[in-house]
Amino acid sequence: MSILVIKNAQVFAPQPLGVQDLVVAGGKIVAMGAHLELSTQGIEVTTLDAEGAYLIPGLVDPLAHITGGGGEGGFHTRTPEMQLSEATLAGVTTLVAGLGTDATTRTLPDLLAKAHALTHEGLSVYTYTGSYELPARTVTGSVRDDIILIDKCIGVGEVAIADHRGSQPDYRELAKVAAEARVGGMLSGKRGIVFVHVGGAASQLGLISEVADKTDIPISQFYPTHLNRSSALLAQGVALAGQGLMLDVTASTTPELLAAGELSAAQALAEALAQGLDENMISFSSDGNASLPEFNAKGELTGLKVGRIQAMHDSLTEAVKAHNLPLEQVIKAVSSNAARNLGLTTKGHIKVGADADLVLLDPASLAVEHVFAQGEQMVAAGKAIRRGTFE
Ligand code: ZN
Image (tube, rainbow, N blue to C red):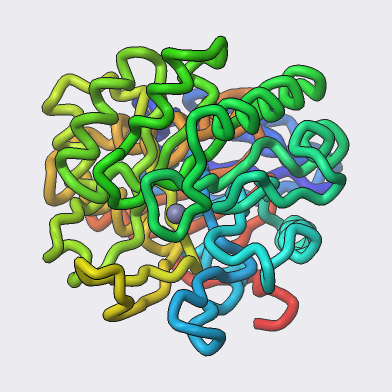
C-alpha cells in the first residue's frame, strides 16, 4: 500500500479551509493540516503538488441510469449504458443507480450487475429498487426485503408521480411503498429513501403532501427530483422544504426543454436560494443516460436526447460563473447534501476519516484536473487514466 500526499490545495470541505496538505491511505483521508511534515522512511509516498487548485469532495449523484433508460419512442430509442470515465471526468465518484420508465426490458438484476461492475472499476455505487411503477418491481419480492438484504440497495425509485408514463398511483399506494422503504431502512441502518420522479402534470407534489398529511410517514422519507421542470414546481418544492423535504433538480437538459420552461439546475439553485430555501435542502442529480424526451400537449413524443453525467460538473461551473453563487454553497448541492440525505456518512465531505473521494479543480476555469475515488487516481491533468473494461 502506498501513501498519497496532496500538497498546497485550497480545500473546500465544503466550507473553505484555506491551503491545506492532505494525507490519503487505504482509501481514506488520514490527516489534513497546513504544511504537514511526514516521516515516511521506508513507505512508498506519491506526492501531488496541487499548487493552489481547489480541492472539493467527489460529486455525489443521487440518480444515474447506468444501464441506460428511455425507449419512449420504441426499442431503437433505448439509451446506452454509462461508462466509467463519463462519471470520473465529471468529478462524480459516488452515484445511485435506478430504473425509470422501462422495468420490462430493463431489470433490477441487470442494474445490480452493472453497479457491481462500476464498483469494481473504482466508483462507489448504490441502487434503488423499483422503477416508475407501483406496485414496485423488486428482486426478492418486497421493497423492504430488497433494502435489508441487498447491500447496495438504499431505497426505492424513481417512483413516478404526476406523469403520464407513471402507474397513476394514489396516495395510499405511495404511502405503502414509503412504509416498506422506511422499515427496510430502519432495520438495515440505511436511509430507505423514496426517490420520486415528478412529471409535468398539474398535480405536481400533491401526492407527497397528501401522504405526509394523511399518514404517519414523514415528508423527509421522500426525495423528489426534476423540480427544475418549471418555476412553479420549484416554488412548490421550496415551500415543502421547510417541512423537511429535500429537493433535487436535474442537471441534464436540452435547449428544447429550456425553451419549454425548464430551468437549468444552476438557475434553479439560484432561484430557490433567492426564495429563501435553506442551502442544505437542495441537490443536483445528473439523470445520466436517461432519455430526455419531449412531448407535445397531446402527449405525443416530438424528440428525444440522452442525459449526460457530465452535466453535474457543467452545472457546478454554471452556478459559480453565471449565477455568482459561492463555491461552498454549490458543493453542497453537488455533493454534501445528497450524501447526507442518502445516509452516506463517509461521502460528501473532506475531513479526516472520510473516504478519499477528491476532485481538484482549476481555480480560474473550475475545469476538472485530478480525480481520486477512494484514494485511487481516476483522472490526471483532465484525462481519464483509468478506463472501464470496455472503453
Ligand atoms: Zn425521472
